[in-house]
Length: 381
View 1 (spheres, rainbow, N blue to C red):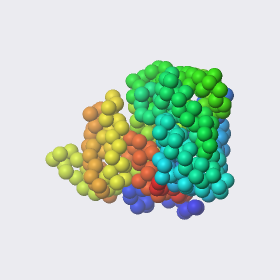
View 2 (view 1 turned 120 degrees about the vertical axis):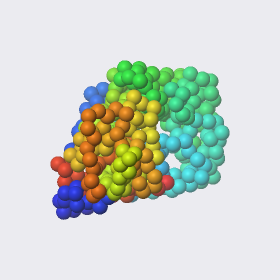
View 3 (view 1 turned 90 degrees about the vertical axis):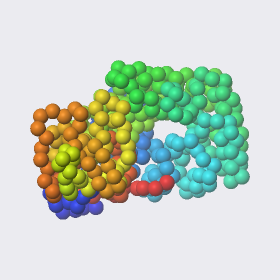
View 4 (view 1 turned 90 degrees about the horizontal axis):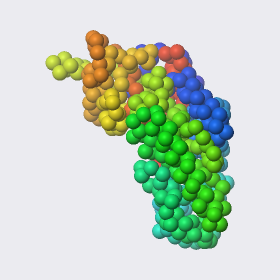
């Protein structure tokens, strides 16, 4: 929706700011990276959940289809014309009827699984409904979370379990979430190669066993940015790169000036004896994500910026209650801390872009320090 150009001083707080120029730079950077490796990007819309952001993303190029993590996302983007959808969370049986309904309405939606037990459930429901669910086997390439070892006999057993009515095996996928724990850019590059090579290995073993594997899907924002080869891969998935955040900055994936979203907050009081400044952005605005806690610099619940988007004297959101945030100096701070008066506004950069954005139902889109638009975003499961 179009809005009257406004100064940030005039906005109600807390609100979610999205810097359009920074967003566009992030989108171009990833598009150029993937295209340069001859790849195709299937963006993960769980980060932005916005048709307006998606339009910007597609304009940047190298995009085919979307990745979702909720069926609310699938419905939201399908209603806007998106048909090629990968639901990239291990499937729960109670969601199969909704997926079948999306398919009946024209969605090319693919699901993932990593166990024979789940394959049996999916196949049985597919046969009952008279539909064939296309599935990808989730591979575990880093011990991060879910998936099946691509070197194991269990992989072939699962593929065989997919060769039944109601279920069709379309490929393999993996998420190198272990990259979020890497200590250096070189370690991320090594993780990217490990992710690619093990995904390709798993796909190759399945093909040798006679299973047609069309899709080899990999991805995380760190490994997508630092991959040096996509040989054998059909698509790359990533989502956080659209906005970036403090965790990505701590990994060396981006600079602080590449973080596109922040929460505009007002100063509401002080506890001067404790060195605290209180704001109206607590964890209901920032989320409870403390993703930088284990990194070299812990930003608490976020890094405090001035209205131009510059870090403000080493201040961080050290503490957060539901509607109160506590600003104080971080351990990394040096020099004099600025004095913030009641009524002053600051911007707070998030630890985790997905989690902070999820607290709001629209973006206040800014450019050159002024509000220029509002973009709604989807929510729910």
